[in-house]
Image 1: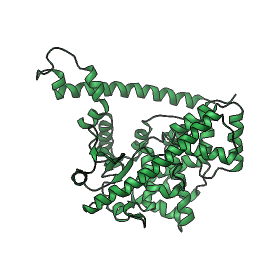
Image 2: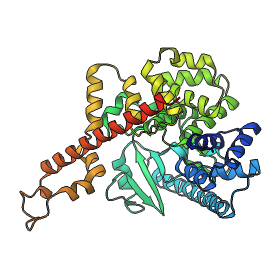
Image 3: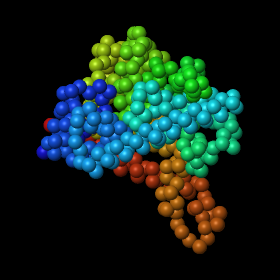
Image 4: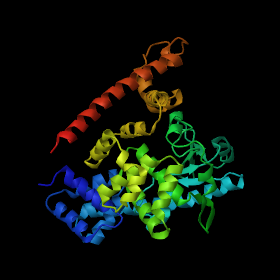
Amino acid sequence: MPGWNDLLTVIQIISRAKPSGADLERAVLLIDAGLPWDSVFALAQIHGVAGFLHEFIEAAHAKPPADIQEAITREYSRTRENGRKIHERAAAITEVLHSKGIEAICIQGLSIGHLYADPGLRPMGDADLLVKDIGEVKKALAQYAAPDPLYPNIFNFDGVWFDFHTHPLNAERIHARRHIFPQDISRFRANARPASKDTPCLLIPDQFDNFPALCAHALKHSYSRLIWLSDIERLFLWLNQNEDMAADRLVEISIFWKQEKPVLYALLLIQELFGTQIPEAMLIRLGVEKMSFMEKHLINLKIRGFESQELCNALWFFMLKGPGVKAQFFLETLFPRQDIMDQIYMDDVESDLPDNDQPDNNQHPRNNPKKKRLIALVKRTKVAVSLAYKNVSQALRLTLKP
């Protein structure tokens, strides 16, 4: 009877840019051997690859139950229409910003639309744009878009949420990340170009610059969804097909952006999970032979199915140089700034505050920022300890599993 690992294998196969006939046949055999179609669909949704499942069914002539087929088709159609809507609104909002003298560059999913001929394949929940000054963006959009009340850098523009950033890894919010990805991204901005002739104000990064940025973003999310690795694989293949000496140039660009490790980790993952052919010389130049035992172990755990949102922090630690920088990164990661803590724990903190007959009293904890901060720190510490225990337990199970 097929199990969890077989289910993961099927999802990995459908996520590949170019699955072979043998790959497709293996996936069909695993499903026919007893993998529930509803579980396949549910996991594909979690990993953002339900569109690939729709494509797989057609390519492999698979026959899911009618209700599952209907749900997959409905999800595919919704993704396609949402993708078109987001691209249309992105072109419109960047035109508004351009008229105010503001350049906005698409990042993450919006930056790689050219890799997916069919928008139904690549889901997007919102649109991410890189700008120089969010304050100027807020002024420019005052009469066009409504800001989110909790996340001030997110705006709703004609039914689509736009998340504005000034740095690819949000170093403006979490300062320790300036040690992970350079703060000076002027080259990233200067190399951006229009996504198409029809959308001159909708800018996308140079795709060589974009590659390490996508790798950094996937690591930031601890590779928790296969769609991010699929983006990386597709861009890697696209660059090698369309550009001369792509592998060498990618190494040079990765070194320039100080992203050798995130790029190396991503390449090792797509090599193992998707079967992507990566030149050995490229891996060596990126430092594969210098990886520590713990780095190799963590990447191997991920290949075997390890799931943890804290994986990024463990791998980032190997990028940091000097005990002072590592200590600062550890403390800011564990205990973020007050505004970040408010976004994460505000509802929980409010529920932990005492409820009495004098909530307007200045001495009441609800009106005391120091006490609210203390409650948030205690809660953060409890969560961190709990997650550490769960992560270590999961890692040990995978390590000892034959």
